Structure formats: C-alpha cells, structure tokens
Length: 398
Image 1: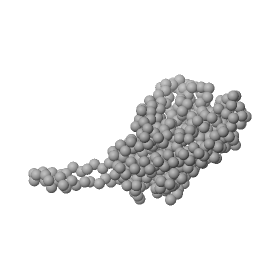
Image 2: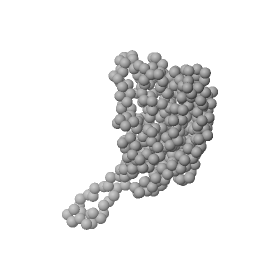
Image 3: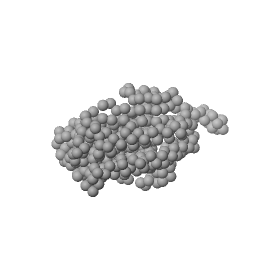
C-alpha cells in the first residue's frame, strides 16, 4: 500500500493488556493458598523507537527558524535561551534544555525530534496509543551503519545492542531508521560545495563536477550496508521473541536542506548567500544536490527496503520543500521576533543555515532540519504510522 500525507486527527484506541492466570502456581500451592488471588502478569507498554544518525536524532532542534544576530534569543529562534531580559537582547544559554544529557557527547537528541511526534501506530489492523515516555530515541548525530551494527560510538554501545534492551523492556510496535548519509560522507560533500563558493583559493570549484562521478559507487556501497542493518534489526527482534507481524520497520530517506538554484532568494553573484543567508552554494551545485544526489540516495534506500522485504519506506525528499535555507517565499526571523512572538512556522526556514562570521550554536547543526523541520517530519511519520501504508511520501505544504 502507498500513501501521501494528509492532515487528520490521530486515531485513538485504548490498548488492552492480557492477564496471565498463573494456574500452575495455584495447583502447586498448599490448599490454604488456593483462596488467594493470583497476581496478574504485567503487560509491557507499547513503544516506538528511532535509530540512526543526525537527521532523526534531532540535530539542530535547538533552532526555531534562523535569525542572523549574535545577541539574546537570536530574534526568537534559540530555544536554548533562558533568563532573558525583557527585550531578549541578553540571555543565558543551555543547549541541554533541548538536547538533554545527549548534548554532553554530541549525539544531540532533541526534545522535538521526529519520534516524539508519533502519538499512535497501527499494526495488524489495531491502533496502539504511544505515551511520551514510550517514544524512544537512540539515534546519534554522526552515526554510520557500523555504529549501529558493531561499533561503540561517542561512548555508547552499538545501537543494535541498545535496541535489544528496549525490545526486552517494552512492546516495540514501530522502528524507524535513518542511516547512510555519513557512510557516503554527506557532511564532507556539503563542506566541499561551501568551499567552492566561499573561498577565493577555490574560485570556480564546483562540487558537482568533482564529486558527481564518485557518488554512484559510494551510494551502491551504502545500500549494501543499509540492508545489513535492516537484516540485523530483524534478527535482533526475532531473538527477543517478536514476529515480523508484531511491529513495523520503516526506513526513511533524507530531505534536501537547500532549494534549487532558481528558487534561492539571493542572487548567485552575491556574497549575501554566505554572509546573510547562510546558503553558500552555486546554482548548479544546488541543482545537483536537490535533483541528483538526494533522489539517488532515496532510490538506493527504496531498493534496500525492497531487497530485505517487509520494510516500509518514508519518503522525505520533499518534506522541507519551499522552506529550505534561503528559499524564496520564506525568510529569517528579524528584530521584533522573540521567543514569545516567534516568526510563524509558515513563514520560516525549516533547516539550519550555515553559520558564518558569528558565534551561534554548533557548526555540526548546519544543514539539518531545525525545530520546525523536525515537527514537519514527525507529523509525516505520525501520519504514516496511523495508516497501513507500506510507503508514504511527505509533501510539504507551500
């Protein structure tokens, strides 16, 4: 089954737990104990869990849009700001307000990450409501497929081992995975494109010409590793006593954080793309990223899901469409916007811009879905989970 996103109220259904009678214990007990009631076995709570990298851990969730200023709440965009003066020109900052304890090792699991928007999931014709405490995020910014399968990363055990623990403690109903971008060096691709636009020593350097020829091979190798991860998840769940029909496994694709060149509101000839917009990319590099690289990764993920079988696909290629960094029709927050009066989501950028020339947050947050972007992607995941669709496309309203 396939689906496209549509706005609706979430379906509510109350899950009922089975009560074990413990008849064997009663039969073996002395006659004096037969009048006592047997304690019922406690059913495990239904839960959902996200695995993978920064695009699902919640990297950049600190930012409610983009505001190009050093001071205060950054025009109402910095959700880590607190103890501000009345004009929000001076504030204190605590990223742990957004990223919690994961800020210490830079996994950066934000409170607004995708999984936290999933309120219910439909499995086998039944809908399970999911409490906030049962929306589990073990994804970590920077993770590769190896960090899921067998490598300790940032002081944490491989994610597959963490999944096994949660599968034993909870009744897992949905697993959603975002992985592969770091295997192909997506961050280095962005850096290469930025250098070509920004540095005089790289004048005339266009990343699509240097990287375009090598990416198909990298993506093919990535697909093999993604399939290995999907098989490992199935095996882990089977070892924990689950049948494939007991839960849903969803692989998601990546959204584009930048628009096509023609849709950029700053001229290619202007350094405003670097200094004001935070989107220092040539038009042809933007077009290549949006129309070639992102779709190629998505196609590879689709093939991986099909090759493993029984894996759902959440297509997020267009999730930020019309709200990318520097896109026409939206804008940055400005003076007068505050945490109490932020620029509305409909008018804002949904991805983190590249910070240049001033201090604002962490560089690793750049080019990731921000608070608004994660809200949109989480809504898409919630919509998919509420249907029986095997594939689901998230098309952003513009």
